[in-house]
Image 1: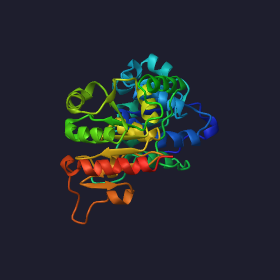
Image 2 (image 1 turned 180 degrees about the vertical axis):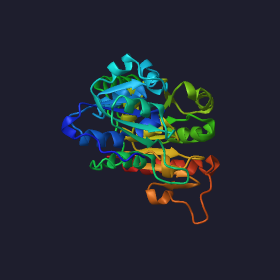
Image 3 (image 1 turned 90 degrees about the vertical axis):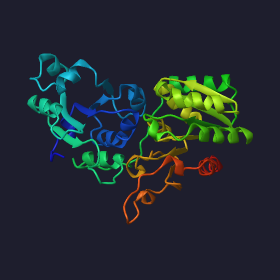
Image 4 (image 1 turned 30 degrees about the horizontal axis):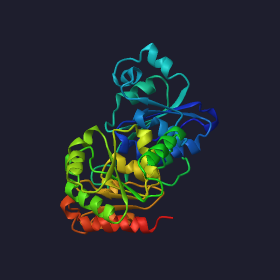
Length: 342
């Protein structure tokens, strides 16, 4: 990571932040964005990243603008070619930039510096073998600027229009006054998916106990979602491929959430929903969802909720297996969260 002293806060007009990745990669960057906002309250924060999450980040006050990585001017930043006039115009008023990148020599960093923009270049993830949560890792880069630290807890906002849509959805599906548990049975990778039949067992038991089940799913979840719906005996309310704002509102309205290691799980925790996240091959010491409400991670046959519990045994870290997470332990975790609800 660069050693860099940025301009004084009073002189900053616009700060450009480049953070590539999917929903989960965006959510874990929220504490770092919050620290930038706190340190430079008068600057306009411009994020290049997951554009679908932009309205949620704006609702939380983290950023003022959000642009996708496929925008033409962003491509110009990464082209390695001399910056064209259009790029110079797009970056007018940008006084400082933060670039998180897998590549320590990013073309975007070089382009920004050629344009005279002081730029902090930092690695996207901890170095191999370093078991530091990605929220903390990203926040470290911002604190290195001499800015005050903030709580490393991601917080997403929800636009009022999406909250209204969720209220209408609740009424239309008879969920008002019910105890609702949201389930997300997919993820970005099949190897991170808890077996659909185990989700079914949890859903059926929830229904037997008088709780309602909300299944959230998107295009990449078609296989596990269909397997779940074929096997479930419980009455399940389904919402397919909602916009991210609507998804966040539905998760916020739910009493608890159960899902895999996915961006949706990070979203559930970040809107404050009590969350149970099931981990297998991924290390939760780096990637466990964090939120203002209780988060329980199921990994290697145990329920974990303290960061110290993610540390490896003395003989090293063994990769977890989804087979280690039983229906009973998932059920117990959900019951624990529901017992603590207001």
